[in-house]
Image 1 (tube, rainbow over the protein chains, first blue to last red):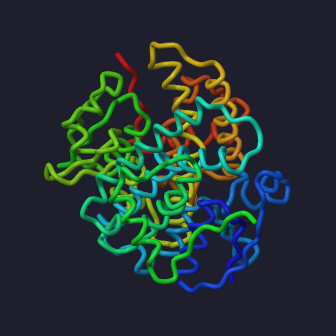
Image 2: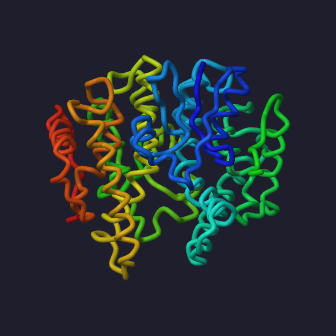
Length: 201
Length: 201
């Protein structure tokens, strides 16, 4: 059985929970809190020297970090990936877009505004907001007349981008000017067995 | 024949040139200068709505952005990728590490210090330096007793990480405390047909 080291309010960790749930794969969840330094302990750094979650583990010895690599590992031979080289590449293209042009702004503002208690730099929030809105505008243009990102069906590209997009309001992002993104969010949300991110108690 | 929209001093573009060269694939290079806004023109935004290079194009209609997705596309069925699921995942793991934990700091400080003429925020340089050095320490730990990142042979994981690592000094990163990284850089550099990044005239 898989173990997942994760944090339930993290979108990157939600990706892993989503694909495991969609594939009916049983897993054990080990909850860590990054705010308490639980991903920087000597013990955890043996699991992921980069000190980040999620990590997918099995046999107590194989550890896979990087949420989007985990999505690939679990989905490669399923309907949530593709067997066609160009479609595979398109899926990966959106996974890299998510990590470089979306997550550092959309996820980070949510984190700063909702989950941290210290002072927040307003200029950083503003810069991230501009870049996050740009990411949504790129998604909007792509999703026009499409139900999903690649191949007109749910793939791990959708799961990766859904993770922080469906809670973007937590970070101050309004999606009302992005009707195609909103419609796509609904398509993913209503997919059988799809789950939403958990809130803090 | 492939066309590559790129900028010769960019590490992300160097990745594409490297794999095309290693695979003996002919290509036409279209040089763009991001500093002159050449990736934000109406014409280029039709090629990549995200306004970034590199883009791999063929038949004047298929456009693939995201350097690491391009590496996958060109290498999937070659010796520079793998046919084994776990090795494939390890390669992707390092590609995502590169885009999230390495490039935004190592590449950005090089860009700010070497290729921009405006004011540079010293605090940003310092923060990026700390995070870039952390990326090199993660690489150092992994590369101990290894010649390459995955499977003891050159893969696209090495090409992705080599791009900005072999010119990290341009961004003020000294690698003298990272002997395994330095040895790995030598291994990649001396690989048959491997190329270094070009300088500005």
